Image 1 (spheres, rainbow, N blue to C red):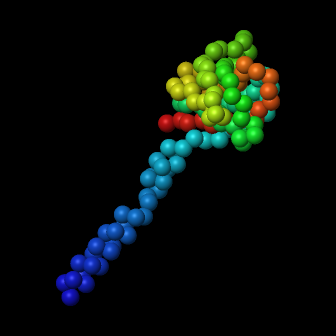
Image 2: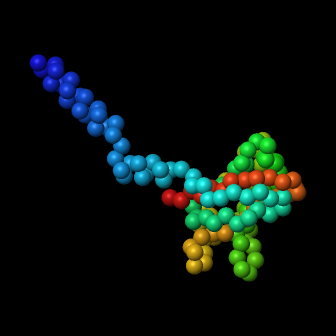
Image 3: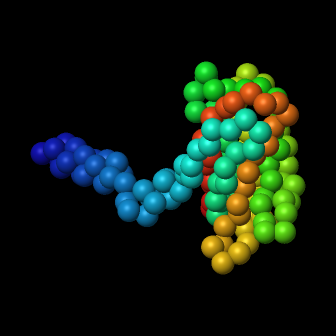
Length: 131
């Protein structure tokens, strides 16, 4: 009898620990990169609007991966601001951290574009990570 009660209590505790709470689910989802667009380009990508935090690009597929140096710029009406550069090897893409300082304007976004050191066509996906 006591064994059945203890077993039942353990089962209830275990079940309650396995159920994710809404706040846990929100925190868990916040740990992922948010897709914010894609661009097919040879010299300069289209604009990707980022809310700050961190920014990354990946190649849409292995067939569109182009190794080389990629520069990230923030586009403003008065020109471009240099954000950073990354050298891509083996089609890995690139990540840029702490880009919140480039968020500006009435839309409260940073308008990022990529340029690269070659004229081969590529397709990239853009992602934003905000905390």
